[in-house]
Length: 101
Image (cartoon, rainbow, N blue to C red):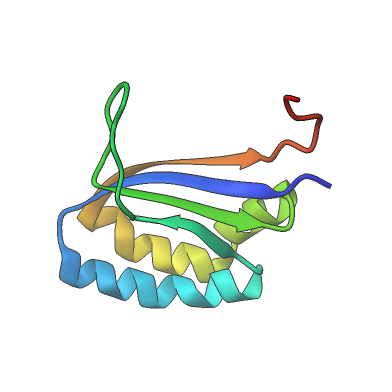
């Protein structure tokens, strides 16, 4: 079964308040088995535009990724992030098909 992923690009306008978001989202991520694959490391924009933070979070499947976002635990955390940042979030199903040889 293909995994599910959150792919987020975020610009944070208040880093102190954002720390509260990080603390608050931990409950939802633990409940839904989230695993950070990318968490704002070094990056180079090759094409197009980006924001200062890139995050990729892995879940056991697409349905779990969606459920985490819609959970009361995450929505409480999201309410902290929304007013102090702007971002793009895509929830996507992974690929389990053949790979290039």
